[in-house]
Length: 126
Image (cartoon, rainbow, N blue to C red; front, side, top):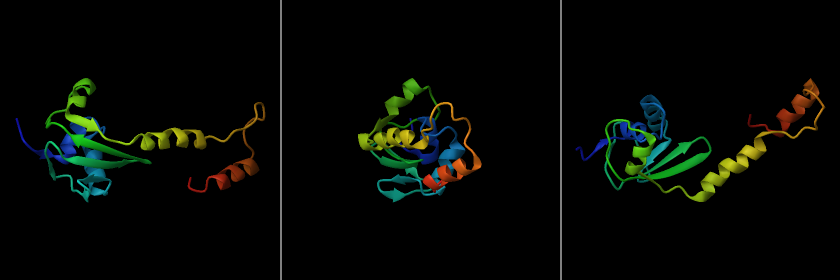
């Protein structure tokens, strides 16, 4: 068994990214760091390394507990990664989900053009 593996391949194999291309793009885009240093997709990881990934608004922290070269089922993938993400990060997802929808009274129908502009001004980052 190998002692190191490319970071993009490992991220894909343990199912942190859906495709290896997405994992490579995240590394190139500066969204993945290894031991607090930004990495390229070809960087080698070994057991004991700590990775931080920016996935949407979530900053996920994981520890490499084993090397795996091929993608396996989700049940087996948990044996190669340890989740160190603080609970506050997962709370961000829950609170953001509540803020996403605008409360409208039942039976008022679709928003008018004026209503839509007011909604858009409420959430300028959209």
